[in-house]
Length: 260
Image (cartoon, rainbow, N blue to C red; front, side, top):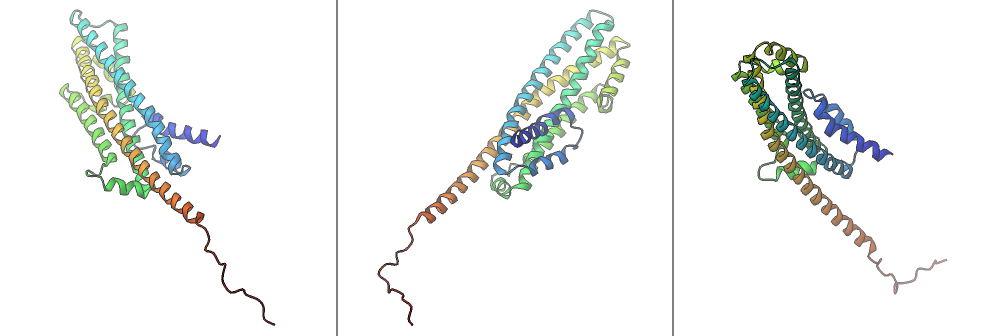
């Protein structure tokens, strides 16, 4: 039962963060999570969670591509009409709001995996030493921060080119408000469709980069754990060999007898 609770906590930390991350609120949860794990449990569960995260990245990529294709269809439809019908624009709003959501999910994954890197580094000296000895230092925490910043900047650039701001698409309420405003004319609708299409295409590319980062991180962690485990196995074998050694013989020595 305890191991089941640990696994659940690990999965909640690593996966659900993508749905609830809002700029760092999970740090405390990560600390509580690692406090109940030993080295082997921690690495094992992070490995399990990474597979779940890879699956989620794949789902995000596929969804972003689907939204991109759907928005392209809407663009073609709008070219032949003065304005999208209300029911069609309602579908557009749903797709664009979903796009905003999956962008946040990608940011959440990057935050979570960067946090895992920081936690392991602070928790296990051997992990920090292993990373330091690598040619590049392999600072995945900073790599994820760079990815997040690049992703945000790319989206901001796309919005800015359309005379929009990130704040206008920063939350569900702001997104829906802006889309309602843009729905009043064909020009506004076309602008929203083009922005959404471009952002969806960018997210497909960014998710590929994020998947690469996660794979590199997990490969490095597996190599570290294998080297640490090999060293522990060798130490254990030496201890066992030492205690198996026969005690030195004391036969042939002078017999000690009490003298009265």
